[in-house]
Amino acid sequence: MFLKAKKIDISTGGPLIALLNEKDAALLDLNPLDRIEIKGKKHKIIVAVDITDKEIKNGHIGLLKETLEKFPFKNGEKLKVKIAETPRSVEFIKKKLDGKELKKSEIDEIIKDVVENELTEIELTYFVSASYKGGFTDKETEYLTKAIIKNGTKLRLKNKIIVDKHSTGGLPNNRTTMLIVPIVAAAGLTMPKTSSRAITSAAGTADVMETLCDVCFPARKVEEIVKKTNACIVWGGAMNLASADDKLIKVRHPLRLDPEGMLLSSILAKKAAVNSTHVLIDIPIGKTAKTTTLKEGKTLKRKFKFLGKSLGMKVKVMLSDGSQPIGNGVGPNLEARDVLYILMRDKKAPKDLEKKIIYMSTLILKMVGIKFAKKKVKEILNLGLANAKFREIIKAQGGNPKVKPEDLKVGKYKYKVKATRSGKIHFIDNKKIAKIARVAGCPESKESGLYLEVKLRQKVKRNQLLFTIYSESKEKLKYAKSFVKNTIKII
Image (cartoon, helix red, strand yellow):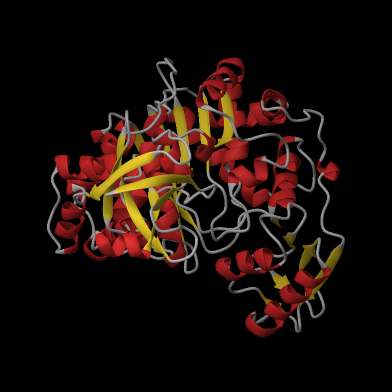
């Protein structure tokens, strides 16, 4: 069948899609998401089909943006269309759905097709679901990680030692990266830190760093920044370092699916992509953290170390207290303020966050053989060397190196939550704290969030301030107040 090409200025966000009129689809006996081969004078491509009775006339074929990037054509050009075979990787996804172990070559083919947009979102969802239901063996996780690395971009850094860190998350604030990076870089080590944006939290590291400077750079620009400052704090999604992982994350998050094998490969593939040699992994454990039990934490620790070894990395794993938020501010500007307070040695600095980053920085320095590591970390902080390095990084990433905490504004609408009786704080729900901040406008609104005044086991009196909610929107503050009143028990 020959059809006339029609350019459609719409993006799918990934999969290659063509639109057919229902009459033409019926002649080819096609159903939605079946595949067709499109052939022109110089090119041919295989895409999935969507069927319509309005947008595309009979005798035409509509090609969307992603398809056009691979298949240049002119409006009205005659294209030969025929039914195409389903990619072999779909059979491998079915094999995983049946609970069978995948071979290296099979995982390689799945990831190659993910990167090349050969699989539809439904097929990707089945792959994620199969991984969630049946799990991955250690070998499958290794194969997946190496396939993601092979099919992505890598930084061209030649340093003998490159350090990195990662937290499995689940705690509001816990903004360790923005403090550890300048400390470690000031100690003379190289630390190209790629970070994520918020999915369910009030802010990811990239969202917080973005309040101070740009975080979106191509890989070659990141290399320049690192050569200049020893470090960077950038959004990993802008660099295509592990594009297959980014596509899988997009599918995983609507149902909050976080298969263990994919979690492990996601983290260490991105470390390998920046050529990390030494990596510190922080696994917070708590009732409302991502990792809820010590047993689960120990299992993850073993798997991180096994996978790191297979990738040629030295991986150290710490199990930390995830029972409550770390720091006081929750939300981009409020969290950035906490970071600046610590670096500037201000009395408003949250002591729990400061204690944690001193401990983690010390571990990293010890990993690479630096003696008197803790003393060195404290000197770097107290002498202002970490502060100077952080501002050097901010400048290199296009921000204002003279920024002060008070320059980071908070929402003009606020609501104070107070204790209804005297007593002791015995439980803080990390997930609900993050939810309050998100309802107030985070992470899109940099000025929104909440500021915690209390910690676990702290004694409080009736009417004592527990936390303050900030929002740029009067309406969103109203929703946040309602959420607190209806779902948060203040005891």
